[in-house]
Length: 553
Image 1: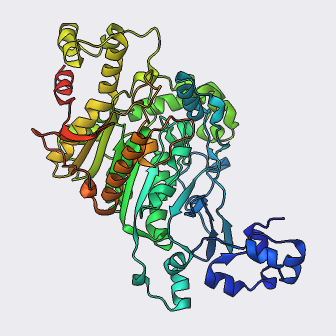
Image 2: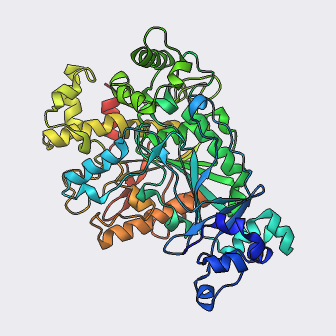
Image 3: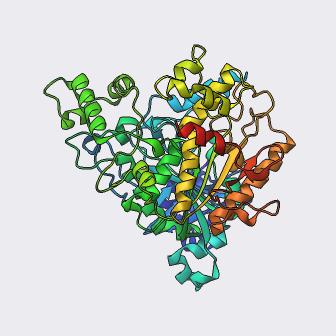
């Protein structure tokens, strides 16, 4: 049979425990006799494997290794469970009190309707892939956990362990600390999870980056702002607490707390940028990677709107005498069942709040008072194509967005040779993702920061119906191409290029370390960007003129 580490701790009298700590080795295969007597057969000795361990406070975190041998520590709690009376309260740091923590399995994803898995299934069906190939996680309100990937071997991890350094007489400076990436998943702030297959950090860790993926409360559980709540933007507080945990403990995993880059895609990109701008973060973040976000540049939910929706939720579930305390006792599924209708038409996200977000991104961009960020900003060529409904029309999309007299000019700038579907995609991508992202790049440059801009154009074989879709770049960034994704040699080449750029930015704040081509920072009037495609190149961004016409409307 196989023993979990907790079993080994319980029977530590029968094991050479100090020797195990010293060597960082745990016996993973054992039988009842071995546990009782402390003996093992030669066959069992051969099955002993090195198991990565890190000391956090007085708790030894016991991880595992992926198929390539990279150490990974899964499901580490950074906050106490926000359940029961703690629902809709500020997150509280987790207290490590046990002698050991089994970090070999992912924790449940944050409570949601399943929209994250639905996104995958819808995308797969559009390109003829069996949706059954993608399975989702379990969901729970007890979900504030993070995952760490590090390519340090057992000896190096032991040196990163401050208590162990003293034990074996090593100095901390004998083991160089590595740069850190914190990745925040997307999903419209209502779905997704921190360990979707494309987010596993092993490949990036093998390039010398400590990768951390984090969870945060979703939907109304993380973004509801009720008048009776003492804390707004709970999900942003969740992410801030995760950042604090990484800043405090990542050195034990070999990471450098002075080099933390926060990254995200879609809503995760917006959250990463909001976290970098929040007073909650202080000076802990050295860089931001902003993939396929953008829309908060042109607006977001207001405090008044957020509170009105919260009261509507309360009224629907509890009637006129309801309260926040009463909502805490409502079964979770009942809340999820009504949330979609009540919050229809409103994006979940950070609202203006004196403590966590005193000035919105839109305000800072418009007023020209962004801090000097160091940031990668990019979008994909066909961000909207996957979401266009069959009955949609370009005219219906332009109504209310662009004055009718400007339609010919906007459509000409979009491309006269495009059909209805391609035109709709071009406009939808521009409104939500592309043009706000270029506006952000201009604002960062004007503030004295550095923005490195890209557009991702690669379309996989057989994926013409969704193009370079929303999220298409993620398998390349993490070098995690699902088995059902058609992947050719050009995709492997593109992956190596993007990994080089990301590693360079995370390590030294500049992606220009790639041997293939330099990536200059964005400069108004020059507008240099990397176009990731079958033949990637550096060139003036092809959409600057289009966005200047579109935004001028």
